[in-house]
Length: 228
Image (cartoon, rainbow, N blue to C red):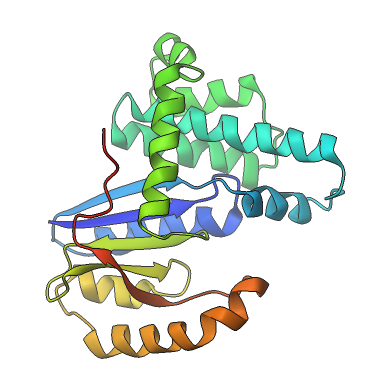
């Protein structure tokens, strides 16, 4: 079975679009796919949110507030997943719709609305959203991103791709056709290797400017999972 991991900023519009588009690609095939959406929160995540909101990046109070918000949203998603992967994903989409599209400020009332739309048990969810288990689940996702070398979002990583002994990572916003080909069993080997070579040549000069990388071999098959 193909494993697809999508690493996102839960407060990012581009990531929200990528989630919908990749899910649509997966639904176009009859192949069985294990699809996971994982939050990735870094200093760049916080800076990106601050810049998009036109806030003062050097204001530590602002930075702390944004950090707390994106972290709590991530914990909310982790807690929602405790009630099932599909319900967790439905909760994430509902919360992102309210925050990113409807532009409602993050609050417990908004979280409750998303939880209701996802069919979550609110009392269980309310207890879980700040639990040690939620924090531990979030840390596992961060370690998974490190092990898969997913440094930016949205990054999609595919494992168990026929013909490859390693995982493959792609810029999730620019690779839907390649993802569909891989899921459908039509492995675009030439495209993978060509873009890998371009990545190796350009990474040193472009990474500092946050340019989008395309696709490259990443890690030995099965070597990414953190120890329990």
